[in-house]
Image (tube, rainbow, N blue to C red):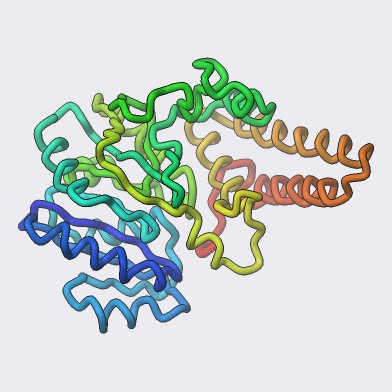
Length: 325
């Protein structure tokens, strides 16, 4: 079934400006490996697919007529992949030299590891959250309250993103971002791949829950360093609000969060998380109005509207809206 050692899976949406550097780097890194690159173009409108076909003919290109999202896009790529190991790689994630080979060898040597990620670095070289704990109602409250940002070195308040931990130390974690993640192909298939109800966000959290349920570990290996911009595709989506950090689409994140909480924690938790965030924005808007910060009032009002829409769109986390979102 598998005639390659490694398949690198890339799901691209309007990522043309990033692909030349990424694919050129991969060509060098994979030269010594028995590997392939499978790239799914999610109906980009920036000419990405034609550009890859012309400039990088060695890449296995799959053109999707519709934007399938991250989960379904990766599932499609995996169905075309011939590697015994899969590397999920975002178009805006550039592994440093040697990272892929080291990660591949380590995963193959340790059968207790089901999925592994590396150390994500932003364009300034600062470490991004690379190994996290599963979200929960209590942890959502800690983040919204500002305690996580105020006390990042606290094991209690900095738990969700493990900001208290030394990012240079390998660690077993609950989940790692899908920007760079290694996993055996047969395990991916055995677990059913990604849950395609998630269009974007939370799909890797859900997959890692199933890896743990299978009795395997999820690891972050910080010597696998990856330069990661984050949110590049999200910024190209028109007509949808992006978070203040510029990296997340608020409505899509809220929809996926509801799907995740309803699936894994039940209706009450999904309802409570949604109402918690809406309540926080109501309080933020009230305080901003008292101090005359009308732009914050408008921001919070818009956020509350999107959170309410997400609840209605998913019927309280029970169903996913039709793709594309």
